[in-house]
Image 1 (tube, rainbow, N blue to C red):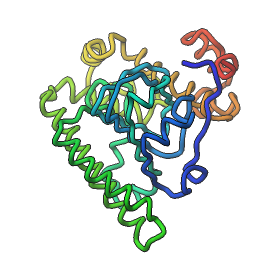
Image 2: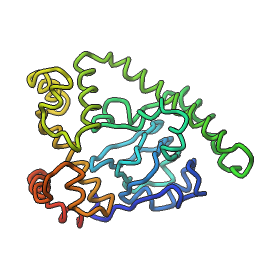
Image 3: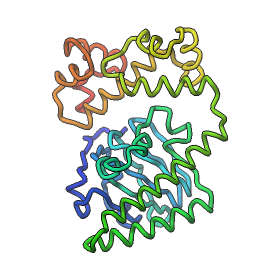
Image 4: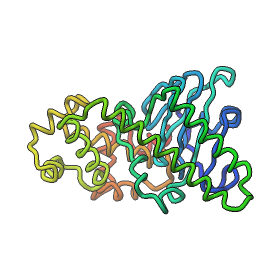
Length: 288
């Protein structure tokens, strides 16, 4: 990852200051926002229409191809490598969680990603020609609404088009999952991931997860070995370290407060824990 500070983008300070926006490729590629490591208080949906390139999410490198969608949670740190505007076309839709979830909590789970979401057809999706045509129609409607946002009821109109867009995204996700035919071990893995996301800050012992899932260490170890080639404790530690990295790079919260937020009794314990796994102290990592 670039050795530079991570910027923090706030929805009310960008674009028209609305809780939603749709941004064409020309604006995305002429600025610097998507090319610098950043964190934001809103979700982003990138549609890669043309070209290919590389991007980074939470310190991991990925590539994109034409006709794909990528969902990015507000909690994730991301940026793109340099892109050629002549060869690449990208569109983004952004919105605050509150804008969508005030009326539709059923879609909230779509932006709760685990570390494995990218390779499981949840966060990164390939589109068929028919799906792209459908998304283009909805995007055209959102552009029309956003370009004339001063008219009555435009916020409601954007909300409904966005909801339809995301419902279609979810259908594609489900199709990908059904094609894969989720096995009992996959189901258990997803339950573990959900449990980990809900508890990793305070619950870092494997026994906690075994008790809730009602399985033994051998069964969990086998599943996580297949998925990550790591034992359960290492998977838990990896998630905790990622969160510490996010807080160090994406916020100005004092290291002492981060330690307490992550369930450490003493800040020095977090310093030792972090350095053992990252080879830098929290202070050193923040300054990279």
